[in-house]
Figure 1: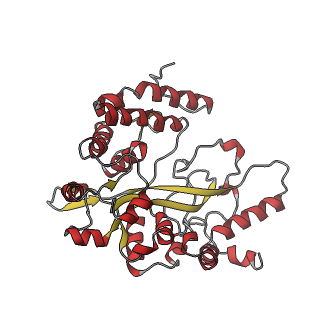
Figure 2: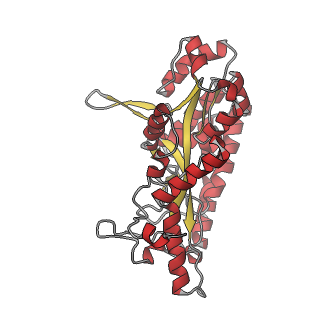
Figure 3: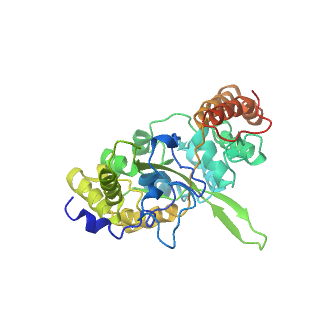
Length: 361
């Protein structure tokens, strides 16, 4: 802790991070909590400068951040004469080649899969500012139907041991969290140098001027440092806690912490820091760094609202009905709209938040 005051004296807690904290509406991209239990960080005098005055109370500093990327066996793809797909249409085109060679592709399913396709299509999981679920929107229904097709029509596996089957080549491609890099580096040393992780495939759209763009957005998850509210805490203790928080997530400390972990424990301990500049300083190869930063600039996050915990359960019910019983994806997903909206409304009432005018009791 020596030199702590000097380290944090010029630190801007927002600068150096890419998304994953409280947005302009005060909504945290993580688990919901009650504001009454937390100390707003914007109350500290040195939080904002003249150029970055907060528009809402902020409660956390990003500590770790992770997101999905595409892992593939470059040696297997080369032997088969195929290239890593840049779009989902590219993936569909190479699926027959892989399957004819008794190989499969690992893709996210259920809520994770839905969110991936939904946000690449420009949609949102919620409607009316979190008051309702968006399962009646055409974009959401199209995203769910598209995701289900990979499992019902193209027969991608629903469950799998990715690390083992990636190592053997049975699954030479998969969409996994980029931190799987550490597991594969240690677990599958026999294929070192034979695989890569690259940005996700995306949705190709044709613009009005005839050009095409690919939206390969990846969904990001973030953990944050928070300060618990305590009426018995002195101002000096509160200042010290704030100083420590700024110091811990600063670029210099995060870089040192991450590199020391790697030095002591090896590649398996590579720290998934949320500080962009600290992430850049870690020991990546040129191609790894390029791919990682390319995906880092195409991230989104699902806003968390009260009651959101119920969504995964019902999406799972709908997906399994399609997968196991060949049910209609649209009908199944829409059948849970009322139940989900009831729970969203119930929790919003508990937190004394605005509820829809047509809310069902």
